[in-house]
Image (tube, rainbow, N blue to C red; front, side):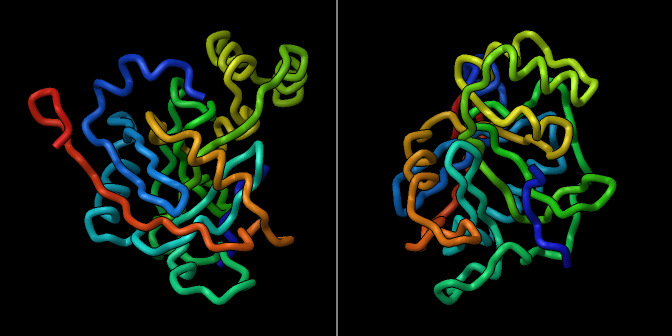
Length: 220
């Protein structure tokens, strides 16, 4: 199996944080991260909820972290992995069809699915990443548009300029949620010392992932 890697902030939580059906709570060694899962990416939402309810993620690692880029986790082979072991190949054996939506992009705090190099851009059945990213200038974004021969929404560009993200991943990986609380935890994990394979020198555990479903306007 090809290693699952990325080939390569929050605008306003606004209505998105209030309209979505599911919220997830990721407890880590560095603190707690809360995120919502987008209803308009139902295949990814359903898969993540299923795995979380099975406690699949509990005890796994953020096995790949790159400052000003992202933190990646969900490799089942990372559970009890030996120090220095190369991680990133583990999966469930399933592929989730890509669910690209123009309104969901790689702003700071985006929750997205990792994948291998398959031509359909189908997602890993379990590995995910959270964008830390960095800010880009208008000139840098313009050059990116010219290179990709594809324009960005003006609203997206404003976010990449003021909040940051990883715009070069848009249209390549499915974004299926966003962090609503705990980006300082993402920043801490992204900043830890790591080896040449971007694995943290000191394991960064996903202690638990819990799912809450909205009912009567509240998450339960």
